[in-house]
Length: 244
Image (cartoon, rainbow, N blue to C red; front, side, top):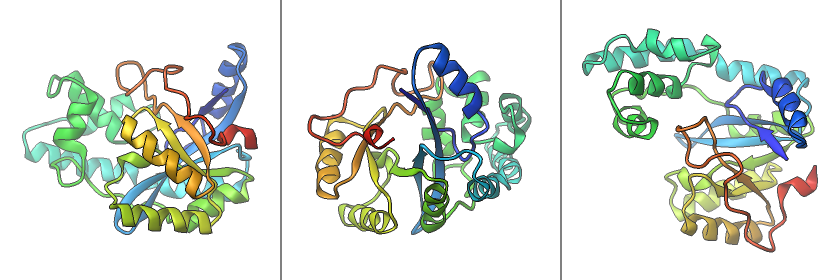
């Protein structure tokens, strides 16, 4: 079984479904929605929704709007630290200009030899507080879950180990997420350590969440783990795919 969860965009679902079927796999509609929660960014995965739902598509389009202007500001900031041509360079890697993202800037900076790999670019330039990071207006948690649920989907907290939340704030977020109808949490992730897996195993049981696995695969050589190589879920959890 395979789900494609591009950021704030579902244009690739039809082609991904064809490819999955050709490989003998079941396919699940997916998307990774960027939200803002108390000044920080969190990602929510939507699974098994109606890709033609009007409200979901309108919401995702609203998030995507403004990405080009954000990219211009990122390029200007990078130029101030001596990196020129990054807007045009990043656009070269973006098939759809309206979906230009930090990943496209990272690919350009790797391509011109500024950093050795994608992760190094993010660590040096593209995280909050660094020269190439520019905020963007994301969705709210209630809006995001409203779109996913309205389209008949299941909402899952993506790679929770990556957020800089205190234990107390993490529990507050998970409580709010559950109160709004959120049903799942990503326990096994390409970016999770064994300690993360153990923590989110416990929290999935405590909050009665469905458990998911996500490789966070962005492409060969750009990801924590290759497709199909992610560790299995801990025993005894309720896999999210049992709800499809």
